[in-house]
Image 1 (cartoon, rainbow, N blue to C red):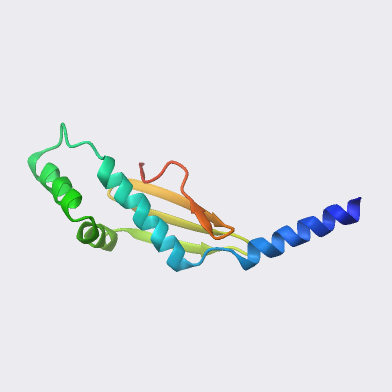
Image 2: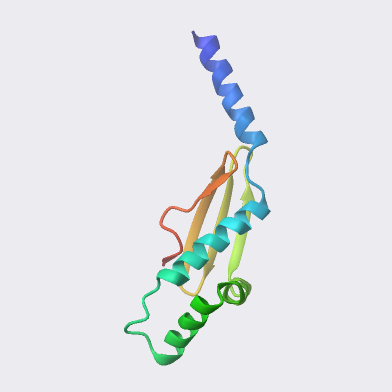
Length: 112
């Protein structure tokens, strides 16, 4: 029974190592998280410039992402069976974990 458990653990770790996400997938997930944060940001109560910028982001999300992405500090850490991506900027922070070819960002791109 112990050998079976050890074999299953070894197979699981091998599968995690073979399917750990790479930086391109991290960038794709980061784009989704940032665009979601921009789309759900409330315009009410913001100054005119911020409201105008948010409206511009809703009209052309791709260009907005490129502009926002250039101002973010991103760190990709490839650990043996999983990856961690840390993103910070604009008084916000996200920490995403990747394993089995997917990334999960608990809390999204939240305020610090």
